[in-house]
Amino acid sequence: MKKVAVIPGDGIGKEVMEAAMLILENFNLSFKYVWLEAGDEAEKKYGRALPDETLEEVRKCDAVLFGAAGETAADVIVRLRQELKTFANIRPARTFKGVPALHENVNMVIVRENTECLYRGLEFEVADGITEAVRVITREASERIVRYAFELARREGRKRVTALHKANVMRKTCGLFRQVFYQVAGEYEDIKANDYYIDAACMYMAMRPQMFDVVVTTNMFGDIISDLAAGVVGGLGLAPSANIGEKHAIFEPVHGAAFDIAGKGIANPTAMILTACMMLRHFGYPEYADRIEGAVEKAISEGKTTPDLGGELKTMEMANVVLSYVEP
Ligand code: NAI
Ligand code: MG
Image (cartoon, rainbow, N blue to C red; front, top):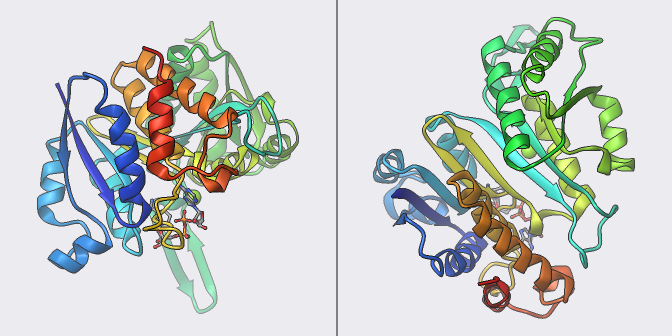
């Protein structure tokens, strides 16, 4: 039995969570769902965006399924990622038939190191008008993330892992990352390994994104290129993500609370549903994830979508169509 903390949060977070839970609860999986509060509304009610009771409960859970927070997003989701020590940020980017996008037939997963690099917060003002930031890259964290990427490739039947770096300029930090990458790659003879400089990779990503299968990179490059990848395949309504640690995992759509459309029941539930599918894969239910993703694909290709993708359905109407398309 896996315990899952369900945190809908604010704005459309609540609406897309209802849609994803409609589908999850339809299956007889050995999950226990614990509904918890966090976000702007929780702050108003309890004085804290991430109440201690929520954090305490979350620590007892195996995973968090998170909708979105509003203005308190940093206090909630960024804090949760730190508290739960999630070292890998996973962002799939794929095209769907029927969604206008810059390219067709794209299907990649970006695996981003989530704990070090320039985002360690080691920034200093060394003198008036002179600031410095320290970039930390360790063998341990690099090996952990690279191994995660190869294991993911193997598990999902993917063929190639590509490392992105800038080792020609940052010879020590990126040099270590590239060196560790090829060391680990040697253990996975069934999977191809190659590497590009991050700048060239951005151009390839924009022009020929089909070149990429699994991508592994350091924290800041990963932050930037995963947004680029999301843009290449059609944007926020479709983008799921996961944060994976040794003990805990957090699953969340990339989008936020979208207050501009909240309360109207028109939010696209796809990102949240695909996020739930990532959780199913994580807990060893790939066949359920495949079936739900197939149903999402069918709904989108038939134009049975929310208005952001050109359809006329409400959030829960689309969720019900997806549910009805799930193969028995
Ligand atoms: P956002 O992602 O909430 O929305 C950006 C734009 O995309 C909006 O026009 C919105 O209507 C549209 N959009 C997003 N998700 C959609 C969906 N599922 N279906 C249809 N349209 C969708 O980002 P924004 O507007 O910058 O932030 C709004 C609030 O959300 C802010 O308070 C911000 O702090 C918070 N936020 C929270 C995040 C999180 O909890 N992880 C991430 C990003 C923002
Ligand atoms: Mg980002």
